Amino acid sequence: MAVEIAGFFDHIDDFIDYRKDIYLASDQTLKSNRIDLKLFENFIGSKSHKTINGPAVMEFQYHLKNDRDNCGGSINRKIFTLRSYSHFLRLRDVPDAETLPFYDVLKIRQGYRNRPNALTIEQMKHVFDSINRDTILGIRDYAVYALMYQTGLRVGEVHTLDLTTSIDLESRILTVVGKGNKRRELYLTDEIVQVLSEWIAVRPYLYKSKQNCALFVSKKGNRLAIRTMEDNFNKILIKSELKTHFNVTCHTLRHTFASHLNDKDVDILVIQSLLGHSSTRSTEPYIHPSLEKIRHAMEKLPGVVYMKELVESGILNLKFQSEYHKRE
Image (tube, rainbow, N blue to C red; front, top):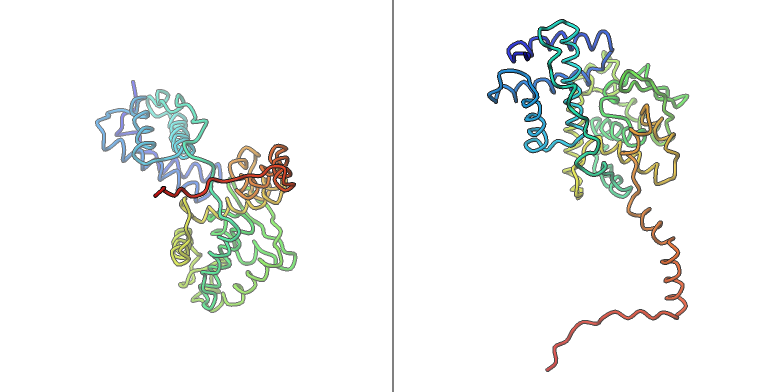
């Protein structure tokens, strides 16, 4: 026996409420859960499967990898959502829920892509120079992305910041509620305090902003939406004409924050704490040496140092082939 497709998706709203009330899942997590389930529902609806079985799930994995170009981590997350949902169906005593195959799907240990990319310091300066700070919205956007870069916040964490309870400019402490409702306190540098102070000074001039407790508000006075932050950042990138070999998003600022700290030889445990990770295994993909650091490391190799000394002393005279000229 297997669970019929017609009854499998009837409990999604109850599942979301259960995750929110009992496990205190964040709005962003619940949104992702709903999107994952809807994606699977649309996929199943486009196929000829009558029940939720192993072949259907395997075909869904192939669809995610080949048609949607999802990385290993993204596929794992979607399968985890389906696994959690199937567990919920078992608790609800949905007929044949124990036959659902999601627990048999192995986790993808290695992703299909390289580690997250980060911007250089010069590229970061170029991006921030492209933000027009002569307007209220420009001052706001500069503060939003400067905060992401200098503290490593997720875009969802910036979205939830409140003006009175999240930030204390006097003590220079920012209180953040991250994934799993874990709270962490971050120190604010002089530079970011100045940037935030400029924004807070002009914030009251936005429509209905005094009626909202959010730190960052839209031009209509609402809490600044995640989608708006992402769209505005994309507009800034287009204006800056930044050239990279990878796709740059708001989350790239978080990768860049960790990468730049790593280049300064900051301990991984400190970076883990700043990023709000429960394990260093979650932090490791974020930190990778820059090309400049790799070059300096290569130059310290004994063989490279010895060759350099030979060249500088004149013992080794390197000659490079000159341009070829055809004989007349």
